[in-house]
Length: 123
Image 1 (cartoon, helix red, strand yellow):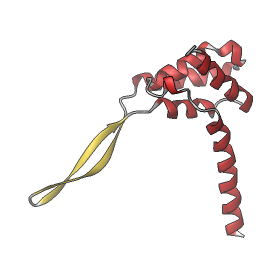
Image 2 (cartoon, helix red, strand yellow):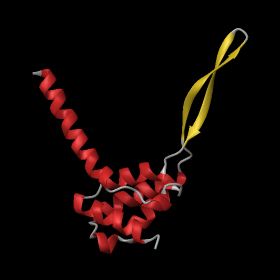
Image 3 (tube, rainbow, N blue to C red):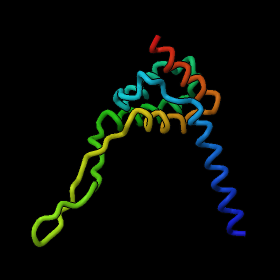
Image 4 (cartoon, rainbow, N blue to C red):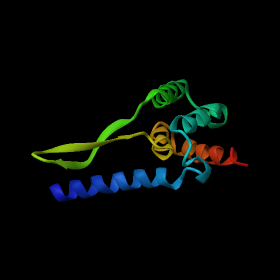
């Protein structure tokens, strides 16, 4: 029984992520700042028919990404005589991660429109 529940959960998660993955971030935005992606989605709020709640949540997300300094991650250990010193690196949110976060706030139809909207900005 537990195995069936885990299998169904994995299947549901895989289906949900495949919908978001189907609307890939255009290549010209992959190296852009994360907040830029959210800003472009907000700029097309009329075309996407965003609700007031979606606009508010996307605005908060954009502000967080603009002011985020990143998170520190331990990438390894440096050996110093007598002790180990952690090696840390600052990791920031990528544009692809920002698009996934924004997509989670949009309906499936809006996700497809957002992907086309972002792709249209490159032309």
